[in-house]
Length: 285
Image (cartoon, rainbow, N blue to C red; front, side, top):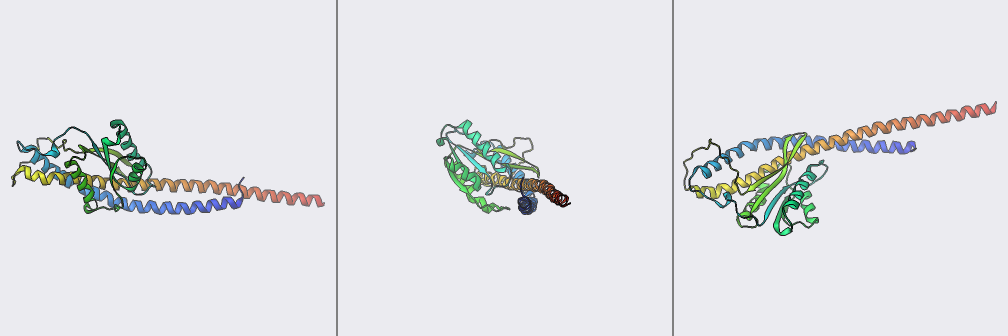
């Protein structure tokens, strides 16, 4: 049985740990609230730009653009969004597992795919295992602006246009609620899943539809990446808040159990001392 001093030391260290996890939980809760607001406020913009792109691309006869047409797939691009830090439960591992499974199912060699990683965890994982990582970006702020990822988003779209790969998939955690984040795979390029509903708006525009799409389609693809990043950040803070709450609760349970053990050990020591005193007194009589 551990000594009273050992149990007391464990109680003290566990209390300090619980204070740290509680503070991290509160910080993540604050960040999650703002990140959730950022993600939701971006949705109307995405819906509107998708409506405009769909109306111009599908509402104009004879309009074609390379980003709207599927081509033979010789190489696939994967844009993976993870965090720079851990302590977020299964947030990072779920995305990495989904990407790894997709690669193993679809490809037989590194020449058939390329990875662009946003986040230190994902970048380091794929680099250490010898995957073909074209680029990686770390240090994304907790509340990112479009300027923070414009270069990597533009590069991802340009590489598709230049033929570096023939399709681009996006992997991230979709924010549903504070306790639910769904790992999501989305095909970003080519843009073959535009809305085809009857609600297409008729626009009058200058110059031609082709010239408008030449500017609008890359911006739309970049917006898809930025929207996924906002979604991923909200999911990251929610996952970290949940993980730190579980850690705090587990620490409190451990403190309670250690305190019970400490009290029992202390009571046993006192009982032993009383027994020895009584036995000593009886021996003197």
